[in-house]
Image (cartoon, rainbow, N blue to C red; front, side, top):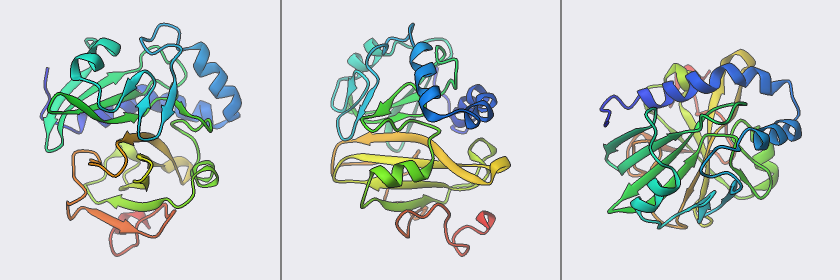
Amino acid sequence: MKFSALLIVPILLFTTAGSRLGARESQPDSEIFSQDQEASGNSPASGQTMIEPGARVGPLRIGDSEERALELFPKKYEDQEWDDNCGTTYTWFDLDNKIRGGSLLIRVKKGKVFQLESATTRFHTAEGIAALDSPEKIEHEYKDLRAYTLLTPPTAAVGSRPLVFWIDKKRGIAFAFAYYPSQHRRYLYKIIVFAPNKTFCPEQETTNSPKWQSISPYSLEPPIALSPESN
């Protein structure tokens, strides 16, 4: 079933995940990572959890066919599909992940996967970075990232502030940060993989949109002139 109300996607994702966020904050990253692996046994991606910049999330690769994507991540009743300016998006909800839930977004254009977005702790980079990690962890491991903000109307699902992105276009990876109001800080909302130096779609926008604004490298908040609600 296709949805025209795109805000349903982050709201549903955080309905599943939000109740677990506080529990994670009190546990070491290494303990959470171990528990996530134990929780992932029934997933079609079980045993293939690596995020490789510019190439893949788990077993699904940039450039794979739409049919291959749906073979690896078969649509469940809860999963979603919609069309927007970037193409077709499939949202696969990680229901087997008992620690956080979350989802994998698969973006397709002309029958090929061109972007993958991991908003679940199941998948991680070679450095062990996964959804919910701190900005400091990403900054330590990834140098020369450029920062942007997306000035779409903020929603409660992402902390009622604009999303902030740190991007390495040459490597084909981006980190999107949402806001955690009760702790007054940003956290890693999702990891985005795309073909190096190729098309990148932030949410349902394009990088040509006036809503897509460059900010200072490694910034976590837009300037007050761009986003008064961030201050």
